Image (cartoon, rainbow, N blue to C red):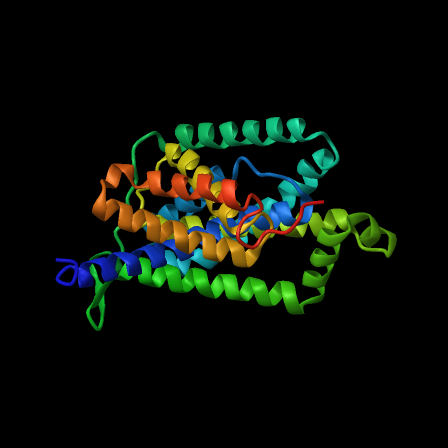
Length: 293
């Protein structure tokens, strides 16, 4: 029985890996902001939905596919993140955590309210040329939207890792993450580094939102699901770990895909939360997390 269903399970695992890579890009935006500024962005899911609406607008107005629209969304969201950090969030960096929570929850409510006013509550699907395409690799039959989206997300993750590892700005970000007071003492403009980091976090959210828009129909109330999923991925992978976000995203993608097959699609999140609880019991710092300051 298992042997006869092996191709089906293999396809579901492959599908889970593909959506998991996009989950990883979503979680990466959350974890990099926390890793550098020790700020938890509770509005992250709402920012992913902003990226979904940007993808929808570029598709409906100009016919751009999500893959083409993705870098444009990333640039727009980077600028928005830089300005948001400079104009608002930097003022709250050294405030107590509960004040920061109130700030981001308020920001999330404002974004969802704006989505409701501008677009209304109805779902807005994207139907690109890849929506009806299947890519065959041996006995695997892959949804082209997920495949192309995962490849684009993987390319963006690799680009970001190279930027953080090899560029001068990346070195400044790593220095500010390790010791912001010491970084300021040697002349780094820490608030500017924080603004760039926030821009990168929002760029990841916007790019991932645009890539995921053809898979999940865009609507305002998807934001809470995206925020919860990002937190689950980050906690499993380890807060502040880029590699952990990638591994955690793939694990959640596979678990949801298999759960949808063997249990019930409506209960697919149950396995993810089970993994989260198990991780908190066995290794609270996550798979790749270290000791927190």
